[in-house]
Image 1: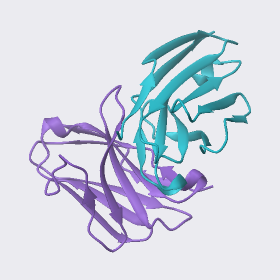
Image 2 (image 1 turned 180 degrees about the vertical axis):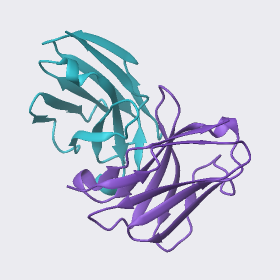
Image 3 (image 1 turned 135 degrees about the vertical axis):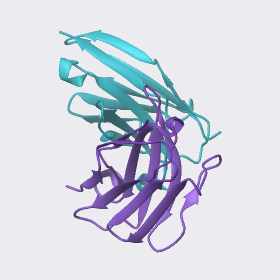
Length: 114
Length: 113
């Protein structure tokens, strides 16, 4: 079946530093990648949609200069949280268009900014 | 209009019982309604999905009931097991199964042995 590999699963970083999260589609080509953020015991909030080779489309209220998304190939998309602050601590999940059900989620990244 | 409202927020069911989670939507353009299961620290996994041209879909112990006129759909988990304890999200999509998902608020299910 379709698999989206997301790394790292957990990361702790110091305030002011940047963190990169990678999502790779292992056995299919992901022309579109969706990035979500999830707070504890809350729903998934769509942050942005990226299409391979073009600029990401950000949802209203999401700072595009803070959450940099790159989708340079059909199998790799990255989310970089720049100048991270404690309020950026959250669970970040990617989802690739493709695979079973048309939409395959990564396993998530728990970001903690100290 | 883009919202999907999910209830209850939490649910406790005895082993062997039926778990029922409900969702409602407003946007009639939605044409795909998946349910996801999420375990702590993991990404959501597709459980079952339905399109609005059918009123019910069953896969094993999981059934989706869909009421197009009421703009409501629900997940029924028959013979609930402790391993079903997880958070469940309904979602809705425009443009079929590849469209972006609008998620409900989530329901935390606990199945007691």
